[in-house]
Amino acid sequence: MLHESSPADRSISARMRTECPGYIGSQFFPDVPPGETRSSMRSENLEALTFADESIDLHVHLDVLEHVNDPAACFAEMERTLKPGGRMLFTTPVYEGKPKTERRAHYGPEGVRHFAEPEYHGNPIDSRGALVTFHFGTDLSDLILAWAPSCGVRMITLNDPRIGVLGEFREVFLVEKRA
Image (tube, rainbow, N blue to C red; front, side, top):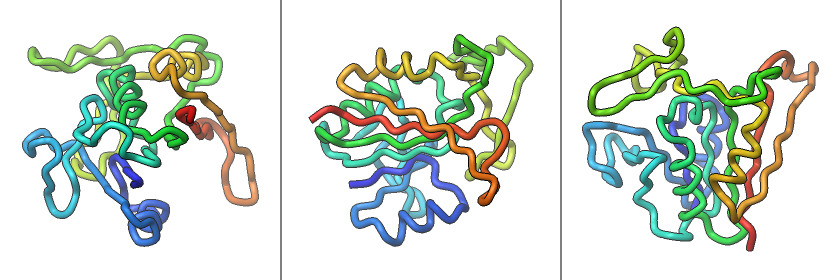
């Protein structure tokens, strides 16, 4: 099974949806119970997934992690639901020159608490955007190893001007659960 969190209107999401048997796309819908669907999209919270233990071959999330409230819980859940040898493939902005990850906002029952100027990125299900809760630093790989101890981490920094991959935020992470 392939799980993609927060698929957007981009070619890679469309390709996975049409070419990968067992594809499951999910969004976080606060008003839809976890595991249920809205318009063929499953409602999932990366911090509390409804998938069975060791049931997923690949978790994919592109530019999602910087919007979650508790990345440690996300990685613990993805690790729990991955089959041995399963993988997580994701992108998130990593700020070069920032050695430590910075929390920018936290949302809870009392509302949103901001620790820095609010920042929003595009959101495929909300035109207001998605609040950025973290700016990840160069410590992200070490954090992932602490959050998902049965996994190994590879960070690949792409640089290919022929296809327009230049500038900041080019990191791709591949996390593999040991068999």
